[in-house]
Length: 343
Image 1 (cartoon, rainbow, N blue to C red):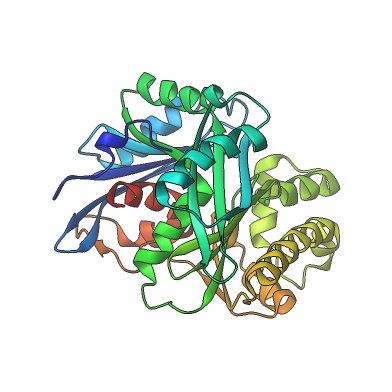
Image 2 (cartoon, rainbow, N blue to C red):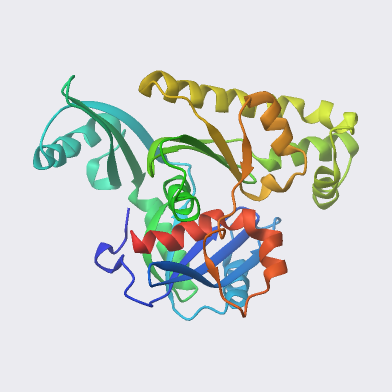
């Protein structure tokens, strides 16, 4: 879903910027491509005022100043509320016929007028024997896109692409883990309010959904139980260990709900495509919980790897490598948005 498709591709050496506007922070990455390599030339972070989270302009400015951006052109994403994802099974047809068919399908599956939405689709699997096509369709109300565009323009930026978080996760995985072919990977991007669940194989997204569970749910339970303010509860959360039985007993319902959603997602993929999820990659700010990877490994029975969104990028020598390492897991969406310009 691009606001200006004609400008989507960055030219040789032209920087691409991904701006991830979250509920509690804004993250930004600037990437250039040269000689078939991607180089990170800037990154930044700006905290959002939790007492007034709807006003994110100060955090955007802080993050972008931190990144020392060299362009006003940016890619961004909208929140998952109001986003519709559908998986369709259609008869085998030509590209032209498919385009016409999808214009009809959008009217069937979206509960508002076609003129009110922006939508895109992707072929997941072509079955010549059964003569059908499995499709992924994503739609967003134009007002969501327009709201994000207006916010960016108010801060002085020129939006190039406006999409959703889940769609760009595969960009990060493809660039940083190109050797992971012929296996199925689950990507869990766990943010403050939402967990993006993506299932990727051979650089194609076969399944994605957003679950309204995140780190904030854990923080709020700790806050209420121990009568702490939000900042203290956050500190208690990140300082906790599996030995802290008092905390783990409190947050057990949230972890159980998250696991259930992951099970359902993996089961759907495995039943639809006859393949299993081999490995799980973890990203997002909540991935910094020291015990989370081990917890998921024990309960999912699969290898859990912390996704490094800059693993295969060339890092500009002017950047602070220690700071980058400290916030790397939070930069996944921002990196994915920047890389969208090179697709």
